[in-house]
Image 1 (cartoon, helix red, strand yellow):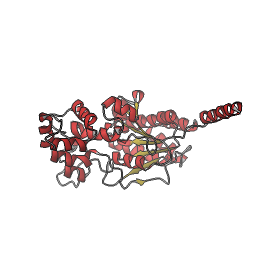
Image 2: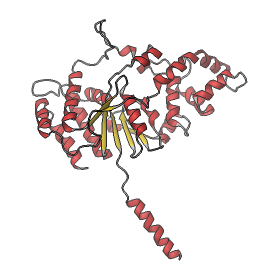
Image 3: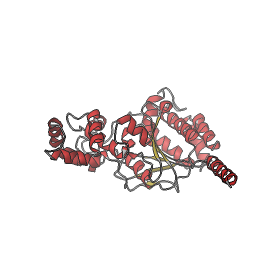
Length: 336
């Protein structure tokens, strides 16, 4: 009867509403977060021996806030094992060139220019993460972006939240096969913005049917001075977005540039054709790798509810004077 069907529909709807959403996988851009912590927390924050620990405090507090906010079951801090990979520099020599520190000419690899008192704090952070049993991951010859991209792309079970202050990672947003969102820290954690496909399409005006891929193509066309990518001269963000909406993809745009009968304006055609070699080289540089040889430095990525080595965590917290931050992290874990 219709009464029975109505009751069954109500039960199914209630069951759907009462079923908890799957806990997300949190993928953290380690370098992005501790750089922001270093510059966002006063340098006057020091440990018992006088060493600066502002980045350590800020990073641990941020992780605690993210755990409380997102309630993940799994979490990985992704590392930059090669912040300026040789294969990207070979394709675009200007890639991150302005960030290279002046070091001994005999050095085997470029060294990124970072504040002198940040590098020791990164080691402190990694010690505490290891003692807690919180997963970290890296890929030799690849950047943290590539680690994030590879782990996000490989996920087939749970939704993913990528946390970073790097807009390049907006190209990862998708709903297939699982939801991948980017929590963008451009204005800090307190004003972080969650981007999915709809938000990327709306904010940047790219095609809504492929916003992640289109964002990467937008970045390639407009360039990115912060990464040493010149882009196509004369093609800014608005023009790039307009072209992508009109033609759908970079491939179609270039096909139209080579077709004298296409509707592309002469001026735009000239600009694009003059930059064909640059664009061909820039595609693998701009796109986040999805097949990096990622190594997980823990047994698995499950978020530990208690420290793997409680005594070591306590000793490190006392040594670095970050007991309150460690306590805040544990409180966030206790609430899961």
